[in-house]
Amino acid sequence: MDEDYAKHAKDEIARWESEGPGFIAQVGDVVLWPAQKAAEILVPESVQEAVAKAIETFLASLDFAARVLIDAEEVRARVSSLREVAGDDLKSADQAAKHYWNWHVGYAATEGAVTGAFGLVGLAADIPALFTIELRLIQQIGICYGFGVYKENEQEYVLHILRTGSTGDLKAKLEFLIGLKEIEQILLKVAWKKMNEAFARKEMSRIAALAALRQFAKSLGIQVTKRKALQMIPVVGALVGASFNGTFTNDIGRAAYMSYRRRWIAESGVGDTPVS
Image (cartoon, rainbow, N blue to C red; front, side):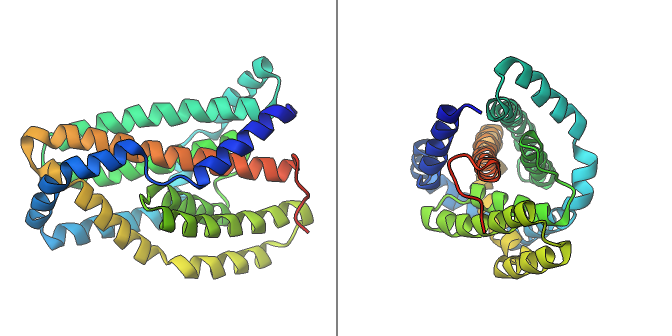
């Protein structure tokens, strides 16, 4: 274990946790705000509701989606191959995670450009495709660090990463981080003390109740729909779709990367004392 590298990783994680929306996102909001507000007025409420329902339905099927969207063995093989070169578990996991992160950003931007070119009609296809990309990205990064994605407990963790990465508000991000770390503590106790699954599920249910899936899907649906409202304008739809999807996926990828790194370091006991 490269202790210096692990320390650098922990510093990066700490900086990310205290960061607000990125500069590009802030500038984009200011520049596009007038046109975006005008477009929002033209987006029917039924469209926002449909988007929220589509997100809710998709997120409710995380377990099934995890089994059909990814090849876990391919991810593990990549990490193993990188480990032979890097000679360090954390470095190899980081390198593999960055590969999937970067690849999905490009893929999401391309998908957004294609569907955005069709205006509001393309939004119906864009939303399921976008969240399929986000889910696949989070799960592949999780596997890079040795965490399974098929267990019930892990699905709630995936949802919390999505919550944390999708918010553009620092206060909300900090609140989601608290929930994310609570889950990490439970899963860490499971790893160290071999707690039974029944207790873990009970604890996970308690946290899940604090941020119900339906409420999250609704708020996220509204956020996504408003940010994508400009896609209904043919001239700029492709550009808006590409830029939003790329930025959104980059934020989700960073949240997954930092969160799973933090978990890996905690469970490896690098510079920390195991949870009692």
